[in-house]
Length: 447
Image (cartoon, rainbow, N blue to C red; front, side, top):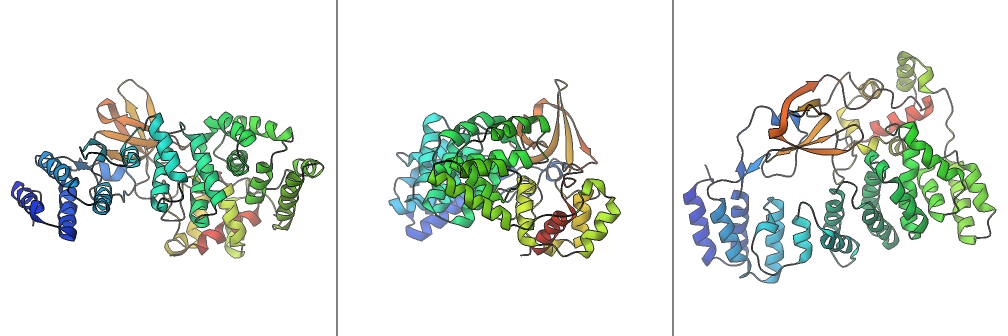
């Protein structure tokens, strides 16, 4: 049965005026679903875009009845009680109806800010405040935080402030860790090193912890160039006596900073001494990695050792984060999805497949994540994988994790590339023991 028909919309609209309570909300939900329809497939979009779970349409477009649906939704909103207004706003959001374009009278500025594609300064403050507000629902707070993340580097300090407040509040520790890991593993944040260093030095203890954790991750990530790591390592060589640094080292169980730890222990600041001693103890208690580096071994030998050894999945999780794997591969459905999802890697893939995929990323490229070379009419080019394609606009994510928006009418040519966006050699700095730990962690990921 087709629902995108004028007579269906007029019938529902007529009933909407007479309905009450849950029946009225049900009709509102139907109209919200009918606000858009699926656009005609261009025979390319699906294969160039990763799976999109936002719904209800893959590529929504308005149609001839959209204006009538818009008028009906605007008309009914102010006749609802406050609780039903909140429910209606949730329904509109789920169906990707542009709330900011509807005339709904006076409403929560937070809702407007959340629905605005590019929030202004006042709306950024509203979103920051909402994310930190303990009285709001957790899902609303996360939505506000993620909305700021879409502004590509303009709200780094705000995001650190929010993450720091969540650590201070002690709320939802597992979910906070998801957002924190996603933040600190964004290679694109290397462009915000100066801001992060300022927050690390002047922010609260928890803000400094988040900022330092991000900076330390840059020094470990194979996605960051060596010349970009050098300024950060030089900062650390100056022995900064900041509690956040040692809290971050303890979080990451990151070895190699003994001099900085001992320097802090020799200080006269009791709080700093306590943080440094804790970091020293935790790092020392972590299993010391032994064995040759993968860079010095043949692929066949690495594969044999990985297949015959039993690693430590707990340490493997630390390595997964430290190596920046999580920058592209979420392991929880609640996290922001970017590259192929690995939260169920142990259920979907065999151990040998996982080993091969890391050692030779080009062997198999996951469906929907093929690398594209997009050549523009002005002769510039973009290489990456497409993460969104709708409304005549394409989002393409490059190897550094930076997303660029491209208008389709400015494109001259699109070509699929055989190579994976995951570079070869990402694991070459690991020892055999560390690699075995990493594989054991992935094998343990089952849903």
